[in-house]
Length: 288
Image (cartoon, rainbow, N blue to C red; front, top):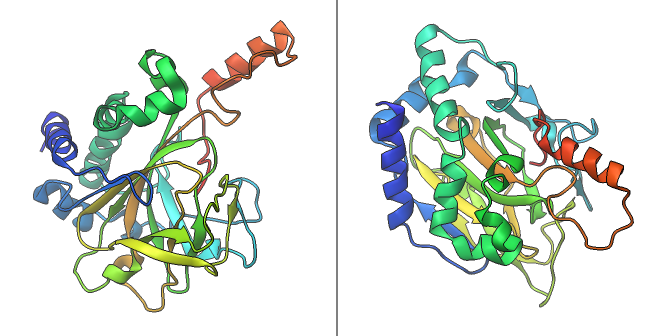
């Protein structure tokens, strides 16, 4: 399958999906990728020949979130980034060609973020106003794409993602069913009016699961950043085939944010430096 056909398939899937507003805006789509593409995702699993990059919560290079009560076991998570300047994997020409096509489909232009925008423009207008109609909005904001795996013992505490996140897409790549409980939990806090800016990962205490985005073959979820968009990965208590193999697409504002406070005492020269910094290519993943 070529890129044009893959994009046409994805557009149709997203157009026909049901957008849910509660407990926070999201959509879950079964059988998201064409079967022939999903078969290649499994056959050409990059983790069979590559270790990936392990996460280290203490490095200061892999995110800006911290766990409130117990440390997130990032050493049990690894990923292979497609949005970095240099390739992060070694593979045969056939495998490389396939993943290059996946990378180009999602990252080569602004097609995918605009496809999500077309599904839920109200979110973008409420958050960014008419700025969402500017062509440079889609190039100033950043894209990240990576495959990932999680070993037994991994969990990710309740969080809402950092403030600059706009939306996140989760792709589940198991070979078989039977491990649905190890998906991503959509949560609410039992205390009303509880929110989080997203800078911390919290304990599971005080949260209840509203819905489960199941870890099952070719499953997809897209959700939008809000201060109540609590989600988590429950503890993985057994060895999973392919170690909870999946992929993420993230769309977010620049590291320093996109919107500027009117009247802030910033010298013109400093504003120019900020604008230039925002326009620089980003070479790190901002948040888990």
